[in-house]
Length: 123
Image (cartoon, rainbow, N blue to C red):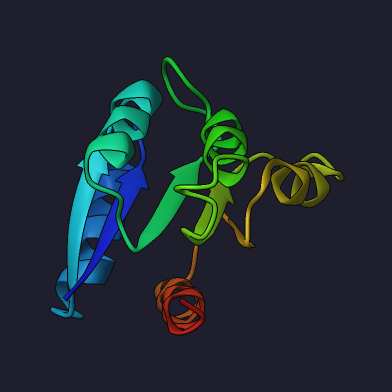
């Protein structure tokens, strides 16, 4: 069973993500409401995939991506960045930080699961 760590601090988004993944039953999903907590958890037990919200307490999703992608031990963990930020260059910023994929919020559940499957199949 593949493990996914999700950084999301908004309870509504957590509920939506939890519902999307509960239907699948093939992933072990852990949620983190603080970026630093997620980063430390990755150090202890690296997941198969990260789903990161950009705006997070303590450490942003982009900062987490940068820290992990440029560390040999964690650079191969695929990262899906999700955000409601609508800046024109947000995709470029996410890619430069090390994101392997980007999904705007609000997200479509089928699109989310399709991106997750695609990223996990590349590992």
